[in-house]
Length: 153
Image: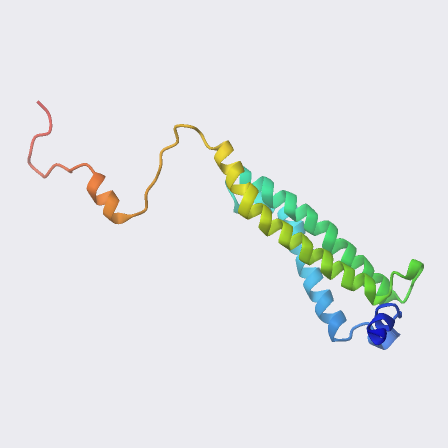
């Protein structure tokens, strides 16, 4: 346990900044930041048409901007070898990964629990129910008149 604690609290040397952990961290957090920025802006309106989905995506994309932005900030401090308040230590990168995992778990929990309630709350009371089962659609479909038959009086 002592070597792990030492690694977490030791500022890396210039050649250790882009070790495998640092490279994977940079790629994941940069992609996460770009995706979050797209969906926090006009991206949600371009992809989704449901206002409840747009609000949910917008909220969680904003959370993603904060988490991934702070993670990139800590990586930038590490890469510049400028270490104010020990922000260049790996413990901040690990804390950012933990924050991203917690945010993702909270997002999944929101989509599984709160989102269906919000959709039901915003749905109109007399909205038609569409059934995609072909067997049910065949039973309830009105008969079409054949050619040459009269449908009126």
